[in-house]
Amino acid sequence: MTWVKPQVTISNAQIAGETVTGTFVFPSNVLVEFETRTQEFFQSEGTTPVIASTVLDWFGQQSDEDIDGEGLRQELSWDIGGGVHAITIDFAGYTGSPHQWGNTGEGGTPADATGEDVHAQMAVFDRYLQTATIDSKNPAVLEVSEYSSDAETRYGPLNVVPENPNALFDSTEESSIYSGSVTWVETLSLDQALGSGGQEDR
Image (cartoon, rainbow, N blue to C red):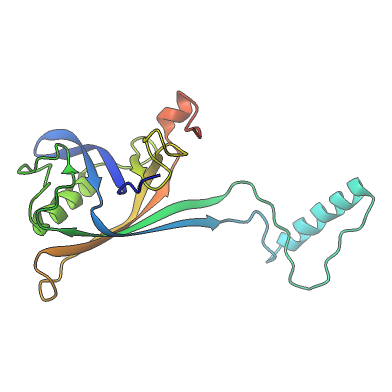
């Protein structure tokens, strides 16, 4: 498929007395990192080895075979779906960028800085993050790589919440460019869970 610039949509931000939904298309110098932070059910510390030993004994009884490891530091692992799916997007923005940066894509308002200078773009993005409650009741929607509303992609968009968003402007290096980074953590959408049953692959 053709590369599509990553974008995120943040809903229900309270800006200038209005409730707005803004879409932010990350414009240039984009670096995307997919990350899965695994979480184990058992860990070989404290009283857990007793539990692990009991489980292994049970497995042995079911299979009529002994289960034994050759090392002292082998732990029992049980994948119960724990952990975190996260996508980090590093990007750069620049004065006059034509990519949508707010609710209208036209710029010039407290809720949209499309085509404006770097200070306006940084401030508007920050304002959405500060005034929208982004959680499982009101997740942001991330489109990146094969996760997109585009009919040619493999999967649907992701419901996400932001982790450690930041934007940096260094006037000594470049007066018309800034850099930013956000880690988007996939979250359950309560509306989808109660309604359609969640996202499905295409």
